[in-house]
Amino acid sequence: MKIKKVLSHTFTILIYSWVGLQFFSCSPDIQKVKENELATRLQSTWQELKKDNLIHGSILIQKGSEVLYADGDLNKVFPVASISKSFVGLIYFHKSQRGLKLDSPVCHWLKNFCTGDLRKITLQQLLDHKSGFGRDLSLISFLKRSMSADWNLQDIDTLVLDDEDLKSAPGEKFVYSNFGYLVLSRVLEVIEQKNFSQILQEHVPDSTTAAIQKGDRLPAYALVPGSSIQWELNKESTLYKSAGAGGIKSSALDLMRWLGQQRQTLPKLNKDKHYSLGWVRSENQSYQAYWHNGATPGFYSLVAVIPESDLKIVILTDNYKFIKHWSDRAEAFEQYLY
Image (cartoon, rainbow, N blue to C red; front, side, top):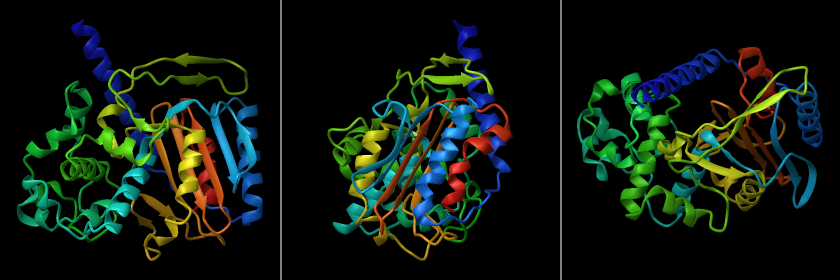
């Protein structure tokens, strides 16, 4: 039993290290496209990848209520990884509409933030990845969390933090931070006096959208490019520890319904920022898209909305991409959104 646990932990470390190396050096290609051609481009990209056995999953593109293209099981539940941040951002946005001050310091809710420069970190800075934290608190912190079966968001309260945990001064620059969104998830729990799973359920009732739970199995596929060969890898998910940083699951249909509900809200996000409240705003296209992607071993996801025309896109894949070139090809959808 001990050997099995060690092997499982070793696999977790290796696979997450692999993901880090795969995406560390990625610089996105940008292809400008007219809005009326976007759905067709995405459809042809999907079909080409599927023909070469490079992709497996679900895609749904709608304009208003009209389905422009759909493929795969639209009711199948996938982990959406970092799209979880978009849910958290909108929960905070709606709370700010009801009086929550996003410029409030985190120290107001988490007392271990009441020291040095940490006391300057605000909710808004965490939401915009400008808190000063790196991608994670540290490699050791990440590994401890990954390998602990009992870790939960409440453990953030007991972390011993100081200014050395910051990569830059709060508010100084954009540094994408999963840890920041774990902190935001915990602050929501403190504010609401409920666990994150309950808070999310209230935000998206009657939906497959939910926090991933311990013991959930979310099968991924291994594909052999250029053939029809594939096999299923049915590994227990560890994403239940990721909460609002990457621990949400949903289906293409329910994500599409959720996107439709955000059409009026997204344009109210700060238009002066490339990234705000869990959403990326396109800067190089003729259309204004709001979007986010997500990636975790075996899965890739993308949601996008163009509010002006009510064009909505959901892409969910559940196959491993073993080389960087494969990753770049299978995530070519993003080039139309930067």
